[in-house]
Amino acid sequence: MLRHLLAPTVEVSAHCDLPCGVYDPAQARIEAESIKAIIAKVADNDDADFRTRAILIKEQRSELVKHHLWVLWTDYFKPPHFEKYPQLHTLVNEATKLAGASGTKGELDAAKADELLAKIDEIAEIFWETKKA
Image 1 (cartoon, rainbow, N blue to C red):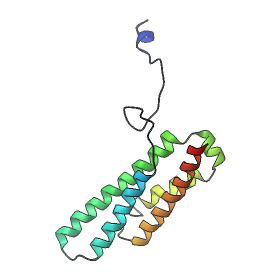
Image 2 (image 1 turned 120 degrees about the vertical axis):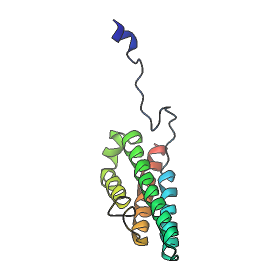
Image 3 (image 1 turned 60 degrees about the horizontal axis):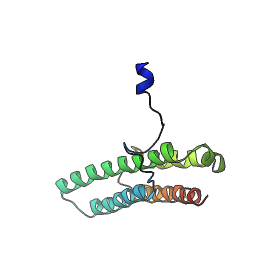
Image 4 (image 1 turned 180 degrees about the horizontal axis):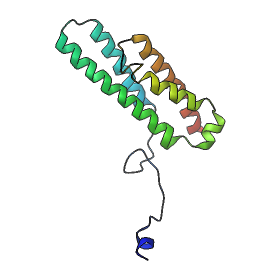
């Protein structure tokens, strides 16, 4: 009896504790742009303290990219999207790996940052197509 009274009456899913319904790949893109800029700043600076701080921030931004992409993948995109865009699973996987230890999180490679931005753009294109539907 008590379990029935405490059971949720409506099931929701969201990227935060309040289901606002606001999703946008721009969040991942902004963090990826920051990563690219940090890589350039590190390359132009010999100060060890600056470089250490910049690398730490770059790693944090890489984690945020992964977070924002995972939110889209797990909370926004639904089975009909994956059916219509079968490449979506692969795109998100490749993008999160580019933001991971073998990508922008673990390296100071501007080319990796460019690849990450390109993958985010591909995901964004699909995202905005789904919003039109």
